[in-house]
Length: 110
Image 1 (cartoon, rainbow, N blue to C red):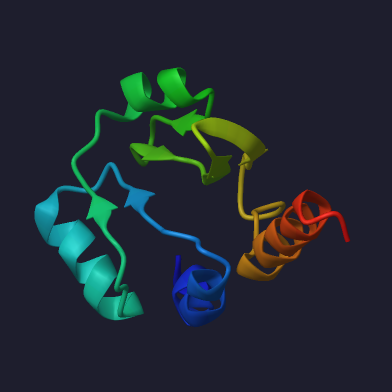
Image 2: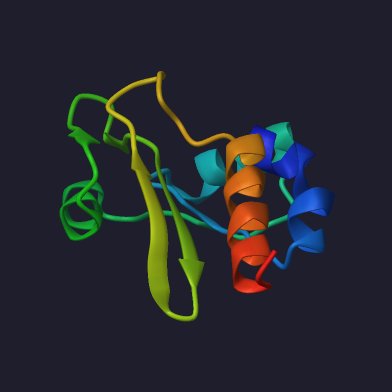
């Protein structure tokens, strides 16, 4: 989340709105928001197993966390989905920007 926060201006320039989901209760979610100085909404207190199942994400019961997944949406459709099973292979803000810029250029016929 911190990576996306650090790139929020670049993301805003290409029309991206950010939000995050968390299984953390309010106080833990608030601490994460403050620690990372997040300026985008973080929905907290989600039911881990149910949310993971609906997103197709990996749920880790021991820590009650959903392993990171990221979606790029456009006009009500998922145009990119990225799922992680651990700390490797997560979508970075730079990769998301590159993909979004590429899709915008393709749509503009460039």
